[in-house]
Image (tube, rainbow, N blue to C red; front, side, top):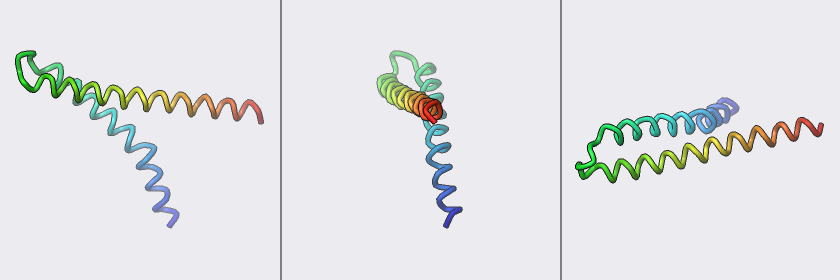
Length: 76
C-alpha cells in the first residue's frame, strides 16, 4: 500500500508539472508555425494562452511553497 501512495505522489508532484511544460512547448511550436490566415490560428492561440496561464500558476505555486518552507525553517 505504501508503494501505491508513493507512485500517486510522484504522479502528482512530477507528472503534472512535466505534462504542463510539455504541452506549453507543443502549443508554442504549433502557434508559431501556423500562419495568420489559417483558421486554426485562433484555436492555437487560445491553447497557447491556456497553457501559459497553467504554467504561470504552477510557477507561482512552487515559489509560494518554497517561500512557506523557508519561513517555516527560519522559525524552527
